[in-house]
Length: 217
Image 1 (cartoon, rainbow, N blue to C red):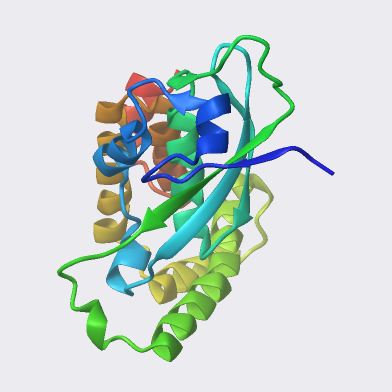
Image 2: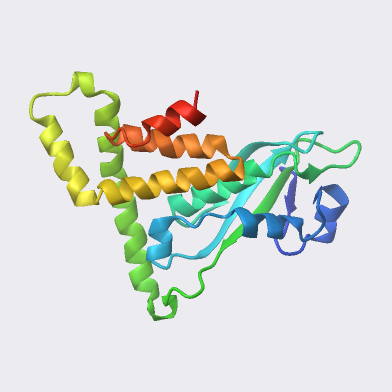
């Protein structure tokens, strides 16, 4: 059976405390999440909330490796939870002789306040998640087209432009992605920022090219 530690993001359990802890103290990880979470736009607009469990391992220096989702909700929240855990790398304290094969599990809680989510039914939220998952396939088709545009067939770009219109991939959407990327730059998360800037590029826009040149060389 794999070694497993369950770590609460509000209060660390006694077993976890005996093994690893956030360098800034028992409530340090909760504070870190509060200060660094960028709530994904789709989930925010559709009142999608809940807890994502992330499993990861720590090396002897407290750096994160081998992270994965063990219980997810929707890919945008799952990705944000993984990003936050990746950003926590080096902020963990491990004791001498620590077993680096142990998996640490942290629940990352996403909760909205002030977005009138009380009126949203579970059925509506579930329908939003299903719609998002369906649209992911179309988004990937757009990305694949622009990554391989030199191999495009005649008339294919018109189809892709129609899909972009259907998905709402317009200047406002792209500006939102860039804005999120710039927030990540301020957090010191260039990897996450460059993923956002590259997404804009791979959606057929040059709006993020200057940021790619500045931050993603």
